[in-house]
Structure formats: structure tokens, C-alpha cells
Image (tube, rainbow, N blue to C red; front, side, top):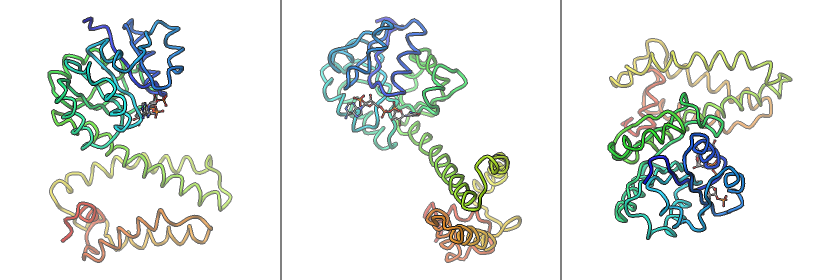
Length: 290
Ligand SMILES: NC(=O)c1ccc[n+]([C@@H]2O[C@H](COP(=O)([O-])OP(=O)(O)OC[C@H]3O[C@@H](n4cnc5c(N)ncnc54)[C@H](OP(=O)(O)O)[C@@H]3O)[C@@H](O)[C@H]2O)c1
């Protein structure tokens, strides 16, 4: 087996770009996709199109999966069961940590090893060593295939537990989606008041740039289990979030998003955290609020 050969299964925007990046680096690339026509461009560049998923898995020791989710992963791998023994399956499909752990066990039963991956960039970031992908699973397997994986992005190995890469990925997505939705909600309030997204941009950007400072300030307190209301108080935060809900309502903007935030604040108030920091809401989320 050549270390310069790889199979890529799943040719959505991510998988197609991955296969192209491997071709750019001189790898022998075997591809397979449910919709075969998506491989046309890659085949024109020298990739080999396997006729079945089983043939694609059989072609190389290193098998990269870039599928929508783990339902798709099983839909593909069940067709390839007979060729799985001895393979290293690097699963760059997104799903939950538990599903990653189950897939690792499922593959182990078939003699294959599983590395979970969580790619932190869109297709345009692939091929850039500054981009990063979380990996978890057997460290020796990761180290053995690290040079090939670093063709795609930089790597950030999180540990042996196969769920870890998926967990870190989902935690970042949690921050990303809620942040982006709060920005869109603010833009809806802006638009309802005749203010464009461009006009609001410098202010949104300034607030976003201030967040790391807040993360750094509160992190040691959260790790120490301390939520003193010395610089902020939950009761003050409740009033602030109520004002957001009322501002949205007055502007005819959907209030579901700030109302959900207000609901969490009110749970903290009901737990008696009114004089504590808003970070006491962490205990509400964690289910340790008593
Ligand atoms: N796009 C991004 O910016 C980005 C960034 C980071 C991580 N990710 C993650 O990377 C993965 C791939 O992303 P993508 O944007 O390329 O996803 P995608 O557009 O959903 O494409 C995924 C691939 O999955 C295949 N597929 C779906 N269901 C299947 C099934 N039941 N059986 C066989 N094949 C099936 C599709 O085949 P067909 O062509 O036949 O439909 C396609 O090749 C996803 O898990 C995504 O969450 C994406």
C-alpha cells in the first residue's frame, strides 16, 4: 500500500474539494459517490472512480468519508462491509459524539479503525494548513496518517475517545449558530428601523471583538465554580434582555429568540441567583442549579 494513496467517499462540496486537494498533492485518489456524476471533474483530473462503495474501500488503507451524517455513513459502509477489515476510516461527516463512538465500535467489530474528524472550515478553507480539523480516536492511528490528513488542513488531536472530535465540533457550532442568529435578529431590528446591515456592521464587529475578553475574564471563575455578582448581576441582565424583547416586539420583529434567552435568565432568578453573576446561568444549563 502506498502512503500516497487515499479513497474519498462522498463528493458533496467538502468531499469534492478534499479529493481535489489530494490530487493537487500528487496522491492517487479513488472516489465513490452515490450520485456518480459528481465524480466527473475529478476523474478528468486523474481520480479513479470505483464502481461500488466496496471497491472504493478495498482500493486503499486510508478511507476518508465526507457524508451528510452518520445515517449516510452506515448506508454506504453497509455496502462495503466485506472490504472493511484492516482499513482506517477517517470519518469527516458531522454528527453527535455518541454516534461517533457507536461507529468506532461498529467498525472495530469489522476489523477496521475509526478516526473521528470535525472540519472547522468550509470547502474554501481546505488545503490551507492554517485551517484546523479536530481528530479523535486511537493516537497511533492518527499519528500514522497525520501527514495525509495534514494535506487537507492543520490537525488538532483531542484524544482517544472517538466522541471528542465531534464534541468539540458541536460545541463550536453551538457558539457559532447562536452568535450568528443573534446578529441576524439585531439586523432585523435594524431593518425595521430603517438601518442597513452595512450601517450596523462596525458596531456588531466591535461587540464580537469584545467577546474573547469576556470569555477570558469569566473562564477561571467558571472553572472554580464561582459566580460572584461583583461586576454584573443576573437581575440587571434580566432587565436588559426584557428591553430587547420589547424593542423587537415594538418593531414587529419576531421575539422568539430573545424570549428564549429571557426564559433562561428567569430560570436563574427562580433559583435565587439574582445577586450573582449572569454566569450562574451555566448551572441552569448544566442542571446543577439545585
Ligand atoms: N460544507 C461545509 O461548509 C462544511 C464544513 C464543515 C463540516 N461539514 C460537514 O462535512 C460533511 C460533508 O459536507 P458537504 O457540505 O459536502 O455535505 P453534503 O452536501 O450533505 O454532501 C454529502 C455527501 O453525502 C452523500 N449522501 C448523503 N446521504 C447519503 C446516503 N443516504 N447514501 C449515500 N450517500 C449519501 C451525498 O451523496 P449524493 O451526491 O448522492 O447526494 C454527498 O456526496 C457534512 O457532515 C457536513 O456537516 C461541512
